[in-house]
Image 1 (cartoon, rainbow, N blue to C red):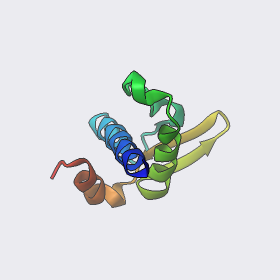
Image 2: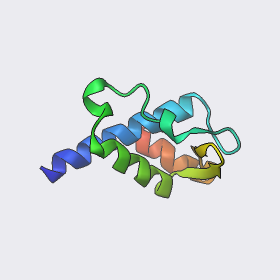
Image 3: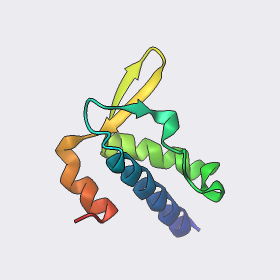
Length: 90
C-alpha cells in the first residue's frame, strides 16, 4: 500500500513541477501555494498525498515566500538540473 502512495506522490510532484516550469515560475516570479493543486485530475486532487507532496516539494525544490496574504512559492533556480532530471526533461 505504501508503495502505491509513493508512486501517487511522485506523480503529483512531477505534475506540479512540470506546470511550474511550463509557466516559468522561477525565483522572483511566484504563485500561491493553493494554486499548485489546480489542474490535477479529480481523482488525485482531494487526496492527502497532495498535501504531503507539496510539503516535500517545498523542502526539496521550491522556495517559500511568506506574505501577509499566504505562502507564495517558486522554483529554486539552484536546483534546476535536479528538477529537470526529476520530471524527465533532460
